[in-house]
Image 1: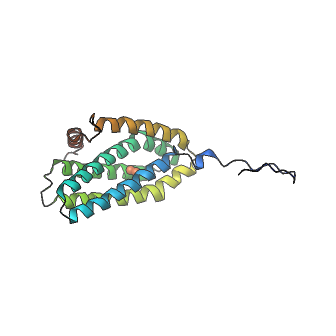
Image 2: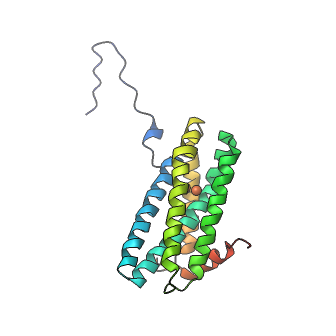
Length: 193
Ligand SMILES: [Fe+2]
Ligand SMILES: [Fe+2]
């Protein structure tokens, strides 16, 4: 498709910067996670409304796992770079507090009997917390990080490697979710009341 015509004497256009389409861009990776987890919350609500207990618990466990991994990757890899780059301590502190609230709810969900009348409400409220948090990241934090011209490629590669590591810990040899690992990690996330 590309043409090398230079009859006008102009140089051929430079190819677009790799960062625009790279699958390793840190912000794009985080936004992809956000979109996936949003879909899972919708799926949870659908299954809960049909009283499909096994189905909804499987989705809730997947949500909890994905959120534990996502928040950990953000806190270990993305947030420190963002904090240094954008000089907005208040916003970064609020993001961390929001993570802690979400983890607390995850811990409660993982310690509950799915037949408990409060189970669905906890998962749905977790979805609302996450929706609010994601909006702040995508509308405020990520634009600032992009403007600060961080190396989003390098950051994305580090995040992908860490994510794979963490995912590995959640999987049994047969590829299914290791629920015991999920529960024990979730229990460690309870904040002191
Ligand atoms: Fe996020
Ligand atoms: Fe976050």
